[in-house]
Image 1 (cartoon, rainbow, N blue to C red):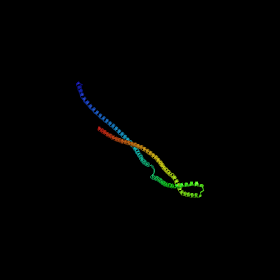
Image 2: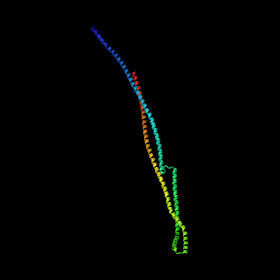
Image 3: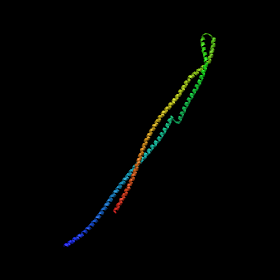
Image 4: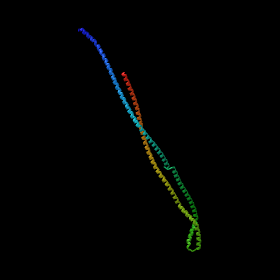
Length: 328
């Protein structure tokens, strides 16, 4: 082979080499593109699968958590509602009992105050009227007795004055009687029967005249002595009766005062219990409001979770749609 042939072969070879390189490059480019598309498809499938798995796992977990939380909240709500209803019923019963007892004790207190003002505590109206009537009868009887006694006293005073007048009129006769007694004593031993007989007759006449007046004076004197005693005795009886009635009234008033003090103490105790029950009722009301607030917050949380689930669902559908578009 000559140099010309070698040169031509070398030139031909050099001319063919770019074409071969170009063809090889095209083949490599086609292979690389195919490998890239295949790798891209595999990666897209892997990404899609991983994303879908994550979405499914997150959705499942979210659904489970949501269901669990909803179930727990429903259970707590179911437990809280009967407790609140029972507490509300109990408090309402206690409040009704307290109101009834409070009204009863207020009525009782007002009644006792009214009775204390009239100082006839716990005494029926008929007994009050009977006691008033009896006291009035006693007072009237004593007043009538005193009036009668005064009338008798005035009559005795009039009789006494009349007797004193009669006594004054009898004083001369008494003086004469005394003179005759002295004369009789002087002449007792002188033996003058005729004169003595006349004097005795005169003396008997005077004594006969004076004897009724002396009896009247004696009766008046005894009556005058007895009247103060009778009057004092009646006054003592009346004073004793008044003292007895006053003592009984004072004793009854003291007993009713003690009873009223006991009732006021009981009323104070009931008021104290009422304040404690009101405080407890307010505490239960606060707890109930707290439970209601929690229930509202949990209901709001459920709505938020539902919205988040819907949002996540929409995002998942959007990602699935984008993956489908990428695969095309």
